[in-house]
Length: 176
Image (cartoon, rainbow, N blue to C red):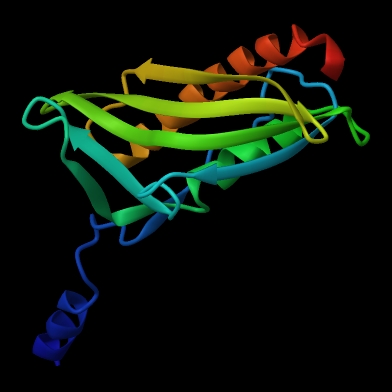
């Protein structure tokens, strides 16, 4: 009987292995405030899916890896779109923000040190006329050595990106 119990306990798996995990940018609303906007988002390959990517820049900065047991709860472009919507005022809005995610990775600068990096191209339009566009980058150091700490740092980088976008949009008179 003891042998059967021991065998069954062993089939439960490794208690320290958390198994598959999903992350998002958290529940705290962004501190940045946007005017009412229509928001569209997309991402360039390979960031259009929910995989959590990392780069080992100390070994090969051009090589992307994906965490095996961790992923985003939604594609990065959708996570950022949700943050903009949460920060935007009520109503229809005069302008539309188009956000294209070009990088959404945890970049390891050493074996045990990393940073969260978001790069995007954004544009504002009012109907069919493009008013302004630019590239934005947010980098947050102290992302730690694993996916969970990288997700926490990515949320901080997204907050920084939201603040930068809100400041830029506030300077666009046509969107006020």
